[in-house]
Image 1 (cartoon, rainbow, N blue to C red):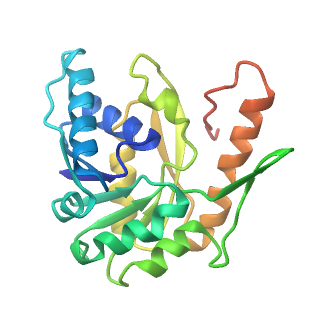
Image 2 (cartoon, rainbow, N blue to C red):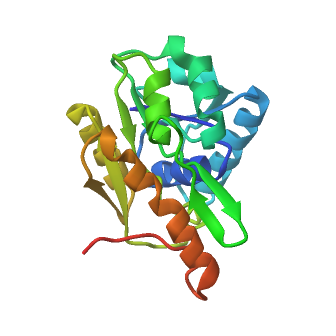
Length: 222
């Protein structure tokens, strides 16, 4: 399966690219507004995986070209770039494309990080409003510490909370998540539950900042 990671040169994009490259044989397309940056990062990821005896074919493209070629498109960009990124690739997305958003809106003050809930109700709702109605949207991968995810020497047992109104698309993304060793997909229902999931991320970061030994904190529900 072709998976495009738009903004795949950033932290969460890098972690997902390396883990899917290491644990699966999916074709990975790294997207960026700057195609040269995308190609350089794709080569960097290939080199890292090759050093571990894993042969991959990761390619870099401008975001729209990456989206055009993919079955699953992960919007691995900050919340403030989410709508602009969708607008730039909207004509490459259709009902056969599953779009995934891990974006979270946060703001910082002297007390730490806080969930910055947009007027639409959630960041995922902003994405849904920007997409055509026929393009399925799934939320996943919000609460993963990107540094540990990208460290292939690190093991973990984490859950990723998955939501969406299209059950088939949600099942597809859950299956992709669980192809990463140590990651379990937990269904939390429809898009209406997005804000509750997104709000977990600043909580985890605040815990990590205030407690020794919890720098790469994920969640597991038992």
